[in-house]
Image (tube, rainbow, N blue to C red):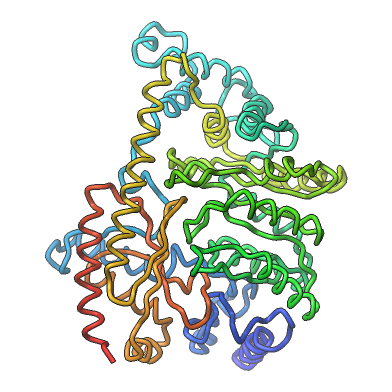
Length: 529
């Protein structure tokens, strides 16, 4: 009886995804749920004696995928365990992780001023000790005093206001105003444990059913496809134009919006990632103005992922926030609903493990704002260390402060090194047979296209794998280099890519380039048509 019921559930779930709803972009789906990949469990698991199985959990969880920590990374971790047990067990001596934007895990050092302030806030008892003056800069001590006085109970172990500590939101609002040249209200700031919870919060707010759609770039950061799936909505893809450096065309937005509407989907919001992840482009001001006007005309919430705003590597491009653009074209609070996401995990600071970030929410009614606050309150508050870091990122040392010169030297060293790393890898990829790679203008990634031989594609099909996942798995086993298949981010059907970070330390980059070059030559020879 149990098996029969489970089998019926699987059958209904499988065919529901395939046929039930007009939101199914089955013929050209950019998501990981392709004919090569499946999240539906095998029927062999249906006899399990466990009360909770993969066949009776929330189907939205089954539908959710997150490629940057997926199958390839699991394999890499097993290989690393093998190397630790037996250093000569593989044809390489270390795993080179190029799969995720996690700078400090790959050797990047934290910014001294940020860590000094955090240390003092965590242990304020040493603030007025004489020896502290010799160990910490004067301005880090002053900043820590200011912050500690703002924290309830003067302790980082205390809960804060659900939106975050008011004084820290004041500092962030001042930083936004200085960046954009337009006023910012601390009451618009919601401090979060990184940008990801903020994205989830907005998806939870906007998505009522699978009839609600969110326009997302393809390729996209898998947080968006995952969060839309978890909250039961529909991802409406718009394709970036690889031929024009991953350009965002308004004509493509209009086409996909109309197509979604014809299928009965109510599109609620537009996601824009700038600088791009995984594609690394930086939008022009004119393009941003077009996007803002499109959202205004169509009544869409603009969800602006701006976590890489400090990561711009080409002199001809500059980051401009969508808040700045919308205000500069004359749109105020009543004209456009805009949510901007920022994180302490990226930029030059790379404080991923501290889980700090915020969203600035503008253009929403007071009634909706109350609901956002209610949802934030359910989680009590974000962690205090992350809140402090978010305020420091938006209000770093200034000219005349004792820490300023060291802070600027550390910042410039990291960003200039990232610029060199991006250029080295870009040049290496473009020398490979059948590979083309657009310039990394910003963010932390390259997204080269690989034109795989038909023989390799058929070999992947035989293993029920996406061809780029097959390629990345072979690359990992041969070289220890971990990259993420493009199929995990979405791509134009029939094209194949992989995402590679520029984050390994600069002295590791030549090894990555040479290992990948040697592997690619052998792979192409093995599968040459």
